[in-house]
Amino acid sequence: EIIFTVFFIGEVIVKLRVFGWKEYLWGPEWYWSWFDILCIILAVVDMGITYTSMAANQEAPSSSLLGSMKTLKLARLGRIVRLLKFKIFTELKLMIQGVFTGLRVLFWAVVLLVGCMYLIGVVTKTLFGQERQEFRYVPIAMFTAFRCFTDGCTTEEGEPLHEKLRDRFGGFFML
View 1 (tube, one colour):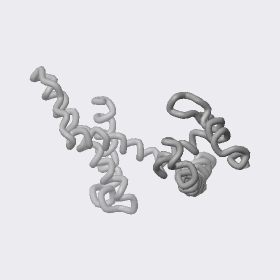
View 2: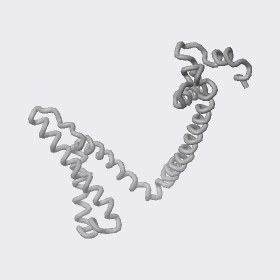
View 3: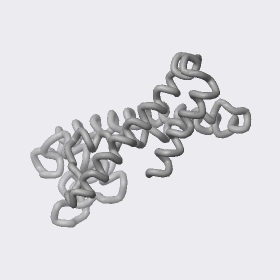
View 4: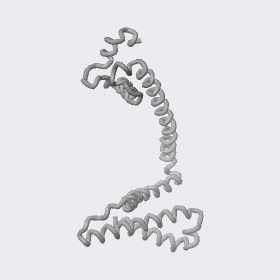
């Protein structure tokens, strides 16, 4: 961690010397510059707190603010995104765009699944809610229907639920 922090500090110093203060801090890519500086500040504060508490033979404080700071260290990985503007990474950029485009389709597939499970839950609660505890409430009926579709269709006693429903409601249930 110390090596990476020293490396990032060195990178900022070199960029300040090459581009100058004004160009580096307020130039066309000012947001990356300030992001780098923020990452360095967080790393230095985190190391300071960690090593100070280690020197005092205490456990590092674990307040929510410090936990958030440690989580923000992951934001340093966001610096890799800058590499996508180079021509050599065109295919990688297309792959990442495909993943994010697929997430939108996946979101709507989940919405459709939940909608279908809700409809099935309402119907099964209405039909079987008084008879079986697996269908007493809509959320429980939704979960039971989901379990039946994904190979887990048993009662709480471990007996096959579809057999219990067929015995009680006959062939109509099987339609």
